[in-house]
Length: 116
Length: 115
Image (cartoon, rainbow over all chains, first blue to last red; front, side, top):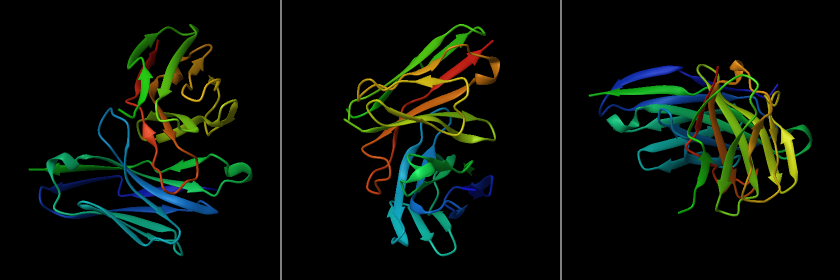
């Protein structure tokens, strides 16, 4: 069964600290993995996209890693800011064929709170 | 400005009264999709469309209908809404599903309450 699991479910850190969010998936055959940031009540916004052959991708203070062998991804946030408080969602796409055509698989998100 | 526009942003309706939530994108994207988001469950895909006149079910299609008569519009139809369809709904689009070069652009959401 294609699934995406994220941990931790919630996280509280102090402003200026670093943190790492985890995403484990069983989606197969794997096409790509995306990390999204979602502010409360708003639509998700894309942070990074990685394919099978990419190990690391950065977007400012956000760095995503991917280990396709172990089917794990992480999102590292450096020097956190109050505006980083949001839900971070891992989304995995399967290669388009058969029953996976057009389907996306979402994690339930990690709720990050940054305190001053 | 490139965007996905959903209307309305907020809607309160009564059980059984048909409603339509509109979604429009101005980026000439082929792929469009609808999601609902509920506390503790994350985003779940309702329906998606790979292109005009091509639609398919996602994870939770029961109680919903969609149509894709034009490339830019992908309305979500609730023929007979029920309270368990109270949720936050998002529409999203992408140039092509499966392309690793593009993310998905999400709309601002529609908060639906069915009483």
